[in-house]
Image 1: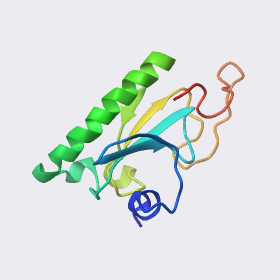
Image 2: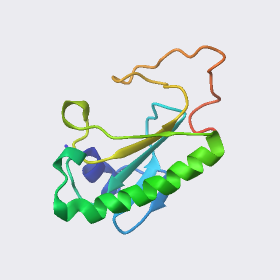
Image 3: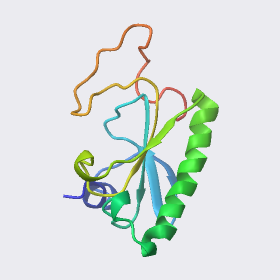
Length: 130
């Protein structure tokens, strides 16, 4: 199953959209692993960055344009962020996607909640506007 095509892009799951272009959708992760956890996906199926072909480069460029703008916004609001993607065995959803994330990790790789020391505790996912 391709969660992003089957659930998100089809409209079966409602997501909090942050940015959208003709080729790209960015939204808040439905089950965030960080206090700020944004997902950026192409609106057509590309399995991963490792599978990118020459014909996919305009879509990848559009994804990077959206990522750059959102990274600027998160950095302005929170002081910094990370941009990441996964491929192969590290990729649970076989659809190219970028993550922008900020803050202490809330869940481990398997989705289990990580206990937060009081000093790192956050008021909840998505403090601030992003």
